[in-house]
Length: 197
Image 1: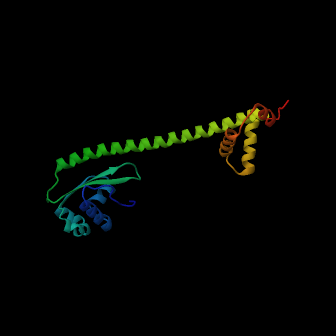
Image 2: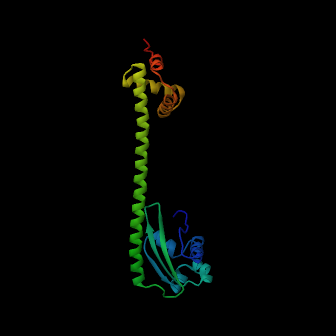
Image 3: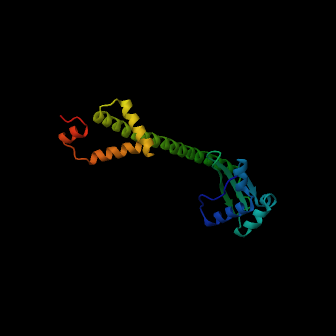
C-alpha cells in the first residue's frame, strides 16, 4: 500500500486514532483498505487482532470500529472509518448502511475522475486546435506573400524551425504577432511581398 493519510475527519481525535493505525501498521482502516472488505470489530476483537493499535489508541476511549473500503481505482484506495466509545457500537444494520453510503461515494468519485479525465482530453484538443489554427494562418500568409503552394509554405516553416531550434507553433505565433504589430499600407504590402509594380 502507498502512503497512508487521512483526507478528512469529523473530529481531531479521529485523525489521531488514524495516525496510530498508520504508525503501527495495523487496525481496521488499513485492513479494510488492503482487503477491500468491511471490517467491524468490538473492543475485545480489536485488542486481539491489533495489539499495537489497541494500546496506542487506548487513551482516546474508542471501543468499537467500523471501516469500509473506499476505492476509486487501483492507485487510490482508502477506507471510511467510524469509531464508537461503546463496546458494541456497531451492528449489521450499521454495516449495511455504511456499505450503501460507500457505494454512493465511490460512484461520485468515479464520476469526478471521469470528468477530470475528459476535461484533460478536451483541453488537449483545444490546445491542438489553437496550435493548428496558428500554423494554418501562418501557411496562408506565406502562400500569399511568397506565391508558393501550401506544401512549400509548410516546408519553409519546418526548415526554419530546424534551423532555429524553435517549434513550428512558436514560429507561427511569433510571425502572427509580428504581422499584427506591423503597420500595413497598400504600398508596403506590394513592396514586402516582392510584387511592387
